Image (cartoon, rainbow, N blue to C red; front, side, top):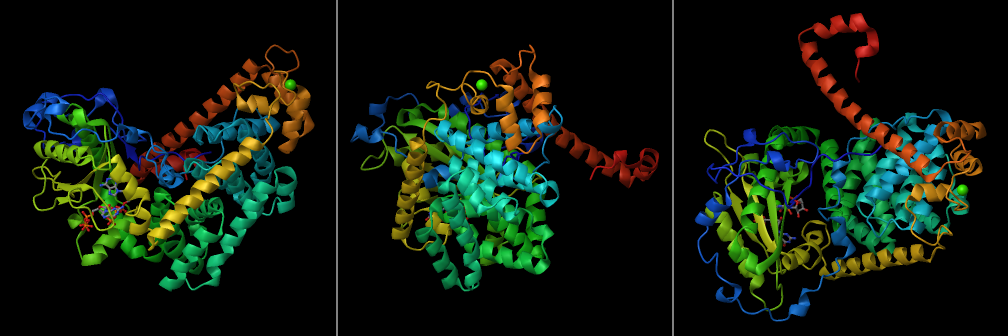
Length: 631
Ligand SMILES: Nc1nc2c(ncn2[C@@H]2O[C@H](COP(=O)(O)OP(=O)(O)OP(=O)(O)O)[C@@H](O)[C@H]2O)c(=O)[nH]1
Ligand SMILES: Nc1ncnc2c1ncn2[C@@H]1O[C@H](COP(=O)(O)OP(=O)(O)OP(=O)(O)O)[C@@H](O)[C@H]1O
Ligand SMILES: [Ca+2]
Ligand SMILES: [Ca+2]
């Protein structure tokens, strides 16, 4: 039911790294392991790397010195090292959250083992588990789970048959986007319910009566947001900018994010609309929603929105850029991962750097279609002259960061030395905003790396080196990416926005905490779906409890009997915790089989196409009729 990752966001992990005597300057993509879903090379098949010894030999100066020999000023105030609570806007673009832009492929709902009404319960349980699994730890509390469960019970039957079978899949994709953005259960539930409202199968009064006024208010707000762009001339930059500011200052920020996720869903299915509507909607996205997504810190969402509207607004340019990037994408993504692993290994094994920093992480990204296109038109560059098609960003956590401490700059410069010794730096392209920050306070050290090999030219790779504190300023501070790219021109605005977002997140958390506890057992619930169905909390799901949930889902009463019969292994007339868990395992198994089925379908489709070019498919088709057809 849910979108699967395509590896668009890469986060460095501590992975064991194989060693090799190969020249440290080159990593051959051909020799890299096959890239699977997340493009993370598996440890046992890691790419060839420079050895720690190679690195040590290549990197001069003081590896074995102690901290006080490094000429560092002592850490001025160790108390500053307490963990900063990141604003919500940072959390949204956190690289550890699954990428929203990866959510493009959706499959039809799985068909779990039981038939009829049992299928509905399996669907409810499967969807509930998947969503709570995606939600942040603190967000999937018992009371919020109860809310989500209620919303799913109302929405699933209402969505099941709508939109040629697509309505449910699309609603769940919206929910997944929201969960990945670490939104709370109210927003996720509102996303699903909004799709049911749009389909006309439930009414706002159903939501108010069965779910609560909090969600109904959120939905009212998102509906108001939906119509706002049609009231202004989005082609006029001033009006577009005012509208974005109006959205951010006037509406509940959670409604804005809900609207953005719905917009992404619309854009992913734009092919079904008439051409003129495709253009109107794409224009709104380009001028209003994509910059808005950037402004609230939902960077991946913004990139996907931009690419989709670019595709409909300028189909020829899009095809050109898309083809160029697509041709290099697989190889470049492998290279990004390989360089990331190699660098992480080299940096972590450098004693001098380790004296200064307590943690190092590396993020990688392949440039988006629209961002590349903007560079091409800005100064008439050719694609191969864009120097950040491949990007790595090294984030260092100095033992003492910010303020008057020079540990941050030291760490950045030491990292630069290690890179220089290891990789081919392009002369004249290095920018040291660490020593000389930009006027807006932006700090980072940028180097361009030549990753070509003899006989194989490749685009350059940009490496950005910064500390955690510098990164915080680049993401959420006055040099923030929202300001840099998101259409907010006033630093005060960005600060205010951050405050609004924090307040909204806190309010939501309070509201959910204040809801009465969902079960009367007081203690921890081992399996939330089980506890939510076991209403009287006696540790067993009775036929009455199963019937209630199934009737909520629109199934017949006798379906509950059939399902009970199927799952009640010891025939005592109710479902124990273990019996329910084995049901859940079946649900999971069916879902993973469906994933694999998709994978096989794709392989089969490719194979059939190859066969087709040989003219054989017509023969098979004749022989086997439609059984071979894979659409
Ligand atoms: N958040 C933030 N990022 C910035 C800022 N300035 C630069 N960057 C980042 O650093 C990258 C490279 O910036 P520069 O080294 O100044 O390069 P450039 O002059 O833009 O060069 P080209 O990439 O060739 O156009 C940008 O693409 C951004 O990713 C800023 O003020 N704020
Ligand atoms: N070298 C890099 N390594 C890792 N992430 C990067 C790198 N450069 C940019 N990013 C991140 O990738 C996302 C998309 O960036 P994109 O390339 O579109 O813009 P940009 O590099 O910030 O700006 P510009 O258009 O000036 O190049 C942003 O979240 C950005 O912070
Ligand atoms: Ca860039
Ligand atoms: Ca019970």
